Image 1 (tube, helix red, strand yellow):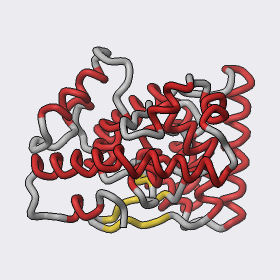
Image 2 (cartoon, rainbow, N blue to C red):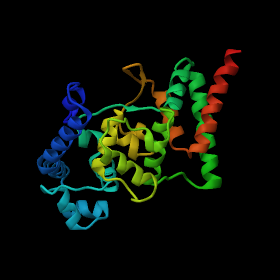
Image 3 (spheres, one colour):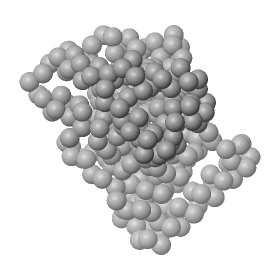
Image 4 (cartoon, rainbow, N blue to C red):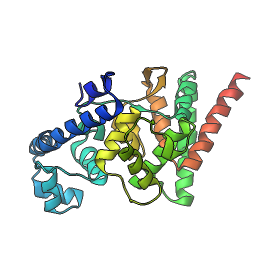
Length: 270
């Protein structure tokens, strides 16, 4: 069980009480769990803190903040530390357990559609999408979004799936500080959310930190989609590759490819 699972599953807690319990557990993790985990992982990999600083491109002082009771890490350093140094998901590091990233409705529809196809048709679709992505990269340059661009896109994506403006998708019962942090980020008052705020956003939406911070989250864990209260994990390897290719495209191109996939399904059925 992860560090925060008991809080999430406790239906007796009100929204403010859950927030307080989340912050309490997070504080405990920052004082001991995260710094110790980093030190253990560095020892296992044979890295010194100075070598880690070079790998992350930060000062030794910043590295020290990650390995002491005053634990602090930016979203940028978090992604680099987990995915490039430790080879693990950001969510597993911060929450203490792996979790499937929940697909937005558009990609969930792609998964359910492709699941009905033969392997031959899936491979054909995958190769077409690869060709489109590579052709776009040739003329427009490779798609390498910043963490800020990924986070903004994901917030809009979650809000769109709930049919509401981005600044309003958090539940009314959520504390005002969380709503203010979201508004400040969306209106440009702050250039980036803190790692703690992004963690709480993942906690509230029951999704992964990797979903909010990485362009292609299929690389860092399982993916799935919701059917009622259940999470259906996508296990077909070709389908996962198709989703991964779509996530490596600019949003406008991804939308066009999703439309093409749905057209392929309709055309083959007629």
